[in-house]
Length: 430
Image (cartoon, rainbow, N blue to C red; front, side, top):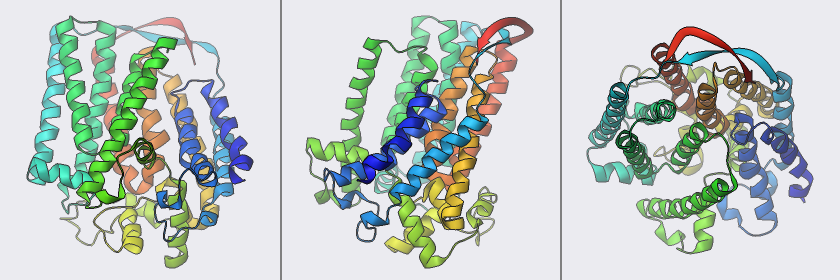
């Protein structure tokens, strides 16, 4: 019943935003809320999945999940987005003339790409003290107490961003095939590294970002190709989940069948149950009145310098409901707001997040040329539309804030080295 009543509150924003582009930040977000909130309720109501798919099925009842409030929040975020998003239209903007690097300089950039990939792999293996320990910790989802390890994720995403920037230059320059092949080899190596790290979502978002930067328009054949890749990713994702269960000593909970693989692939998307868990956490511990946002300001201080630094909210939630801090249960952006100010915080976060999405799209639309516009969309749509929503401010200060800073620095370097000071007036779509 809930799924039928709330469906319009998810579909209307999604259909409206998809008209601007299927990879826009708003579209990514509303696809995520449809899959991570509404679809979970529809699957449970139709008995296609059981309560065991929830983050804490022994504690959360189906009626505890805020189906209607989250639908209202989704639509409120859409209204806020519409208020601050500039209307689409054509206007005259200044587009810088390209001053593309030589093939020799591009080769240097590709060598840097391969070097930083080798560096992140070596650093990861060193900090985890071996390949097996690294892969086991990644798939077991355990936390290793090391300040240095806190920066592995930003390094990983930073390399992803560098690959996206380099993709823009490769696409515009069209260097010899051997150089493009070398760059493609780097992308394959980075994808393998992400898969070994157990990051299904990060690998998928990396591939989506590459697609946004690379493809201007999707044809019918291209759409079929995307569906084929999606099917392959679902199968690979299910296998990753199986390996994760095995690393956690719970492989008996997973049956290697088509239905189990599809269900396992979906487990990383729902987040409305995390909001329900956050509500229970707030009832037990009390509201923190924004403490998580204050703690984010000191997140970059190493624990070696400040041993008493507050632990992340995701680990405190894990300790409350699972009895350990070996991993984390992120409340997410909206779950944090519930812990902070209950449902009033949830409503305020909807309005604030709508503003953030609108500003991100305005920034991409105001790019000096089409290539940079797609690059900005490729970086921001996945960071804001998915990672920030999933991880929240608690871990988003690393996974989003730091990466945005890295991207802005890379873009400024590219603007100085690739574009001339002379500008040519051309019509440019918003």
